[in-house]
Image (cartoon, rainbow, N blue to C red; front, side):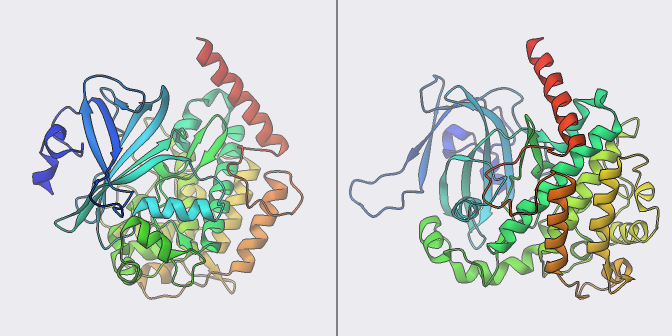
Length: 416
């Protein structure tokens, strides 16, 4: 991989170049061979040009989105770009050919009408198979910034209003996760970067580590034919890849200690830590990498630290969240019980000790929580929210007030 990564984009025909300047104009052109009418339409060529065209993507200086790059398994680079005069996110991924393409996941999410999913402007495969890897690209609508950055931009609101916004964002994240799980799709890597907000709207991107459940409602045969993957190989191999394809700071306790089987509970736990981490970062000076436990070396050490904190009756203070609103406290108390209590007993330590410990999904309990959220967080009658493309942050009286203040601040900044 390092050989390909060091090649200039003009030579190799793509821009997974991590050693040279890559800004300029790029065009993604559907690959069509006049002698082969049945050639796969998802295959594309990349043309580099110094001149802008109507269909080109502009990559400017310092447009790369900073993130941790892991040379094992999947590897992705993201850029803030312009396409047809509009801001967008360009994502280039090296993906093992026996893993699920992210574009296929987005097709499945769109077919299932999952809420809070970003719109895909274009996607395709640049390299079908090179030494067991494919190069995939996605052009995605600009969905905003991670939750913590969104909150940090409006610190004049006060901690109660900010934590109400965080509660709304967490609620919508879990609703998205639940809707996807009902369709047989698990995200598998919820992090701070995959919960983003723009102009009061929440989106959940970064489905590159997602997996399809064996009994999912997705038409896997059609997706496999379109996106050129072996459905049997993908279904058989995704579980064994699980421990190495997560961001440890937001991973569930079972995944941290090596559990290879995942469920919706693991994704919900990650969303729980993302929301608490965002509030923690608002309350520490100077800003730090992550909430208490982030500096602990090793995944198992972090798992034991988490299990100890979550077992304490003042668990929020234990992880560094000193202040929050009543709404946020209710929400985290509710999810803490769902995640770490079974039959009245705290199971956090069992999760940290035994990778094979079975944590039941308790789907009826989760559905009751989602109904309560609609009333307490969004002020809605208890009816299904599934089918909404994207939801707005905050519809309860407190969250709505916070959102109105947030929009006024953003409007003032634009005028300036």
